[in-house]
Length: 139
Image (cartoon, rainbow, N blue to C red; front, side):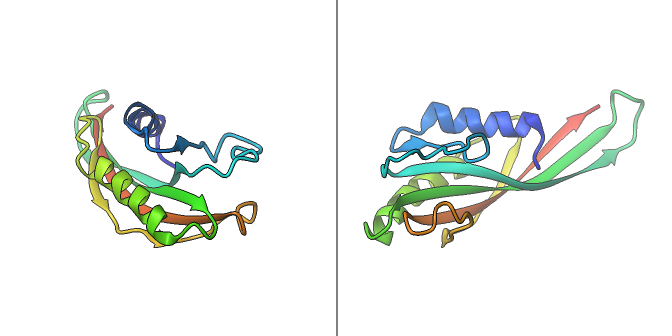
């Protein structure tokens, strides 16, 4: 899972700049979707690694965190994949042009259809886009 610095930066970006649909935190809620069938987006943090990339005194050593997170866009089932793709393309574009300084977005892959959570089967058509990043820091 990504570090707190990365997770906070990504959630802050999403919350500050996304206004097209509601934002759902799938990791922090028993029933985050409620009974609403309004379209939504979310992010899931899949994995990360960390390795030292520069020798120095403690406090000055260079480290690189590399990881992946998944952008999710969902529309109610039977409303059409094209509606979901429009949302996903806008979401992908927002992260492709982002240059926060705290991390670097390396790749934003094209969307694919996915249903990862049995709670959502039947209600949602979901697309995901794998996004890769790295973050260099000293410690």
